[in-house]
Image 1 (cartoon, rainbow, N blue to C red):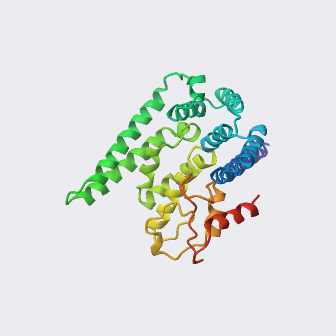
Image 2: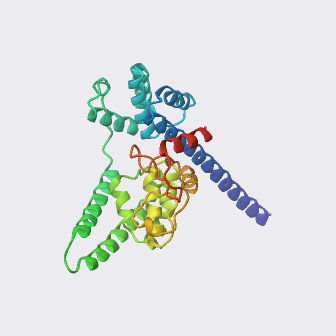
Image 3: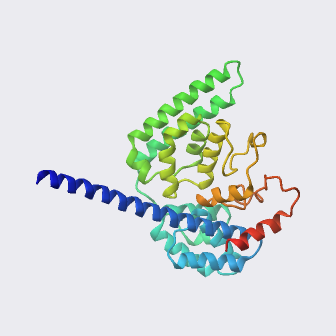
Amino acid sequence: MSILRSSLGFHMFILQLVILQTSFSNTFSQTIQTQNKINDVEYLYENKEYNEAQEILSKLIHKKKVLNFKGIQLYLLLNQKLGLEAKSTEYLEHLKHVEKHKYNQTIDWLAHKNSDLALKFEKIEFPFDSLKYNLSLHIDSLSALDQIARKSSTIDSTKSLIKADSIIFENLFQLYKSNLEYFHTYYTVDNDFYHLILHMIPSRVKKLKPLLKRLLHSGRIEPFYYSSIMDRTQNNLGKRTKCFSYVIGVEKKKPISLAKIRRHRRAIGLSPYYLVSYSGFLPPINKMGKIDLKEYHRNYFNQTK
């Protein structure tokens, strides 16, 4: 009887894991679908097709889809273009209660743009978080060490860089292991953390890949950050990059088709139109000769509607 209970208990545990994984996969799929819609909106905005772009975002908001920061920016910019400031005010009031950190980030952005909207809202004051503060200080110090080592021009600069990289990885990995719950549940990747991992050798990136994938699935690392790290790692291993996010040295390798790049990008919610937001069309790096990029991307957009 005890063996039977043990067996049933084990199978129940496995079933719970399967249900949890399925739920997690579904959430990731929905997040990616929303991000790809936002990428389409960005494309429309750049082409001054404001009404269609605003309509797509309004539908996402109506369906209670969570917008990333780019989506929020585009929604407010589109409302401004179309004279729909009341919608922006209503959305910010909503954001203030459901996405407090994104709300503060948005108010900072509006203030930087000298927007009148910023005058109507105040940032939320959060209680002091000692863990977050200490982790931030630790990552800042590692980032400073990383930059100092890379700016060195002495004869021993290569040895110093190798030593610094080793110190940075060991400290960062220990920081991660000691604060698993925080990194898995709350941490959002910033520019400093991104560059620390971007500069690591492939074997070290591999050890951190489970964390990076978890952050990607929960929307707490920008798809461009994730793809740049993975592309640079591929490049360092002498392999072709998948998303064309890290292009240094790519020209020396056999070109990959734009169709494949787009598939890889859409799979993680990265724009199939632009290298980075608002930075110009993705170049077609397969051997297609001279083409009209505007028409090329328009045809792609129409096919994926």
